[in-house]
Length: 328
Length: 273
Ligand SMILES: Nc1ncnc2c1ncn2[C@@H]1O[C@H](COP(=O)(O)OP(=O)(O)O)[C@@H](O)[C@H]1O
Ligand SMILES: [Mg+2]
Image: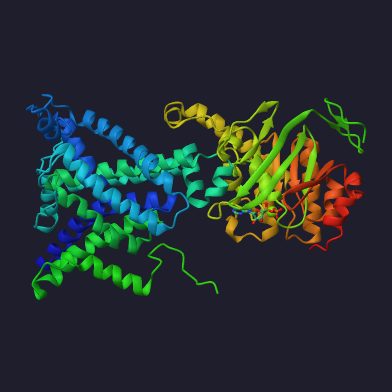
């Protein structure tokens, strides 16, 4: 096989893996949007917040240490423990559920029946608040996150592909794990929503609030539930991204990549979020590989947005959305 | 009709009506400056078919919304099974065994008929998330039991043929029937129907009337319904509340109401659609 094609295949695979992360963040958006009509701008910051909290709990960091030390004149920073990854993940999930409850109790509950734009602006406020709050709680330095996921080049894939093509593909173990976990997550979410009582209720709320109330569903409970699930998805995305590039502010920017993903996939489609994420991931890597060298590179910064723009023009309902027909 | 005692009464067609199930006491409901309901009291008895009639904008739907918790009245009390009810959210009312349909149909348009009717069982599904994961057997038995009720309701309302059809594709008349099916699936103690026959043709109206009578007869379900069509109301109901401009202007058997001068002036005299 010609080298270019092999390189291309490798790029394609790496693109798929990157796309998985986009898909995860987009999934968080879709879940909340479907159930409550809220476009949650804070989804990316939630991933950052989750990752920060995870590192903090794992490393025994004292929350609000700066604040406490500044006001009390103390010098405490650490509890002096190191928790195993899985314990810290469970505790962080608890924090995300609390966060879901707080968001609903203090913000969303008061905005029921408001215009979508108002709800959207509330989540912008929420994003900035959480960003500052995360900083205050855990500090703003870049943190290393290691919950024990395998990292580095997959030697198995390297050897197998070398055996086949005489060229070893470079695929990161972490990307493989991320893909498997994301796939499991989607399967679990699908089973949950199709077969459990709460999943049924969730679909009902997503479809019609009034009807849902009339069959005995508490909207408040469902909203806390979806925000918790979105928090869980954010945590998973935060773990993957944080392990890869450290827990830092730029993590919240992946949310911006989720926007073009949503424009491709449609705002209400779970398969759309997945496929959209993969297309963007693969598209931007391949585009950079093929066209990048001709235009001086850095196409990854804008490719996704241009693709989304094209979709907005030619297929505004997204890949999986229903065709929008204006009623007159 | 015999005299109504505390225990109940026997209807003209010989059905036994029981004690008071739901009592509305001096209900007043305002929307800003608009008084939708002014100081209305009435009761609904066990096993009875109770109608609320009145011209458009009289406050009938508002009254149903008060009973089902969608509206909270500014004044007055709601008594259910002899207990005063604290202000409740609609989902809590549903959990007490009160099911309803809406004047403008509120179905889950994205789901099949079967799934829609299945949501009616939600108040009967006990298994929480954890127990579903751990006691798979128990959750499965529950699912089977719920499916049985749902299939019974589907047979009863003769919608077997459309059980897998997405609700969005159904014609209006069938949607109304599916909405009734969902309410029935909850096996409610009290069934509230807001204009169940509005917008239907004669044949569909006859079917719906038959279903309402059969539900009451076979399951003993107490029913409160709002209807515009006077003929239908007179045929179906045991007792009728008449509303006009948010006030109660009549209450009694269809015959009593028909001969009430206030009612004739306010409602029967007025041309209606
Ligand atoms: N949600 C609401 N907000 C404001 N006004 C309302 C609302 N619901 C009902 N109303 C008003 O209350 C009055 C009674 O309405 P409704 O109960 O729907 O009457 P009916 O069902 O008898 O036709 C009307 O004047 C209506 O405009
Ligand atoms: Mg009405």
